[in-house]
Every structure is written in C-alpha cells, then in structure tokens.
Image (cartoon, rainbow, N blue to C red):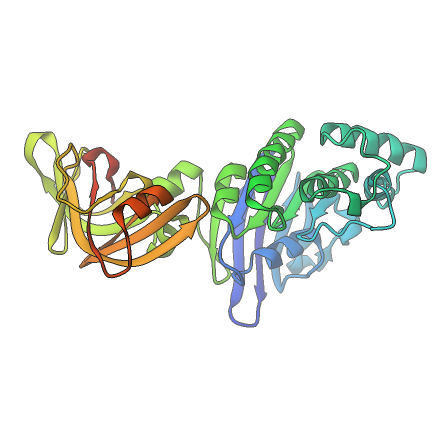
Length: 352
C-alpha cells in the first residue's frame, strides 16, 4: 500500500496531490504537459523534496515533513524508468541491467544472476551482449524496465515510458509492459500525456490539471462519468449538461439548450450526459436508421489521430465524432461544411 499526500510550490501553481495505491495496482497519472506529473514522480523517488506532506510505502514512512523525515532516494527501493531510458552506451544489455542491482549493494555475482532472471522475464534472452545502439526502440525500453526491476524495487515509477516509440511499436510494447507489471504484482505509478497509455496500463487513473488530480478512478468510471468538462475533453468523451424528463416508449428525454436527445436510462432533473466519439455517425443526409439522436451542425474542427479522424460538429452544443480516414474522404468532410451527427439512445449515458 502506498499513501501519498504532498504539496510543493511550482512556478505557475501549487502542486497538491493525494492518493492511495493498493499492493499490485498500477496508477496512471495523465494530463497535459506542465501539469505536475513528472514532479510528482520525482517527489516519490526522492529526487525532489516536498514543501509539506507524507509518503508511506508498505507501512514504512519515507517522508514526513512535520517530523523532519526524508529517506534518501537510494534507500527507498524505488525503481525509476526515465523518459529517455538513460541507458549507459558503453555497457552491454547485461551490464546495464546488472547496474540496477549493483547500485543497491548486490555483489557482482548476485547482480548478474538477478539481471539474467529479469532479462528473461522481460523477454530479452539472447540480447545480453548487445549494446544500446544495436537495439530497437522497443528493446531499449524493455532493457530500461528490466534495469529498474533488477534493483529489487518494491515500487516502479515510469516517466512517459512510451514517448520515444513509433505508434506501431508503442502498441506492442504497451501490452508487454502491462504483462510484466501484472506478472510481478508490483505497485506501479506511470505518468503520461497519452490517454491510450493511461487507459491501458492503469488499474486506477488520475487526470491531472494544474497541479491537482481533478478526478481519480477506474477506466470505466472516468469514461462513463467525467466530473468536469476538462476531464471529458482530455479523455475524448462528449459531455453535455441538460435537464432530463420522462420520454416516449420508456425513454428519457434530455434537453440540452435548444436541442433534445433520448436515452434508455431513466433519470429526471439536472443531469450530465456523455457519449463516446466512436458512437457518433456522420452523414450528409438526414439519417434514416435506428439512431434517435441527431445534431445538424457545422464542422468546426478536424483532427487526425493515428488511423482515425476526430470531427467536431457544433450548433449551440458541440459533438465530437470519430470516423475512419476512408469515411472522411467519402463524405468530403471539411471545416465549415454542414453534416448530421447521429447516435443511438443506448449510446447516451446519464448521471447526476
């Protein structure tokens, strides 16, 4: 169990973070650049000192500013994997991973045994004699992970672990890292600006904004019930405010400004409604299907994300749709054009 309550004055805002992490869990802190994610990681590692607060890991107090206690970084048994991997170019793969164990006081023989075992678990068998320059980006990433684990860490801290990888390698390595974390049953904190990394790796996910965790929860909780427009926008979820009342055929009707939408969920009064962009279909003609909800509006934004295109349609309210590049070309989508954005009643989630 990790219990954290820390504060530190940064240049633009105060950093104030609180969270608890159970044994074997992975916490993903996600947010835009400069929101305090990496500073939080450095405070946990002991590379920075907080202005106030406490850190308790597995019953051991590592930091208590009120008592004047701060355990040095090298004694915290915390493995840190940096954004640029920080591999030693003059050491082989085996030498790099051994360094992690030797830095914690292991003998050369013990360090080599631990390094070979960790390399096997990281699926790096046969690469022991190679140097970092001879490895792919994904292999370098796994070597850095193995070095952190070989140190005998009880907690793993990962700073933007996928940022140096191309999209294809990123997806592959993301799955491999997830397997290693689960296999080791190790408490892990990963910071990233990439929502896909956070949603894949985190058992719990904390969305950070200007030094604070503005929402902390499971993947389902954050996607289904974002608490603020910032969280919804950052996670890529449509969020609208409305007033719900009973509708026809057992549906609820939600009025959002001058528009109304239907949902299968039963709710009344002031509500928030969410809809995933991939549940929204775009068309040039009034849709003639089972979609009960339609917003006719103007395209105000088009963004390309990997193999998908995100299109924002506005008319008093805004709705983001996610379509394939082929659909974008087929429909001739462009900023300023008018389209119909439609979605089913079952796609609209409601909460107070």
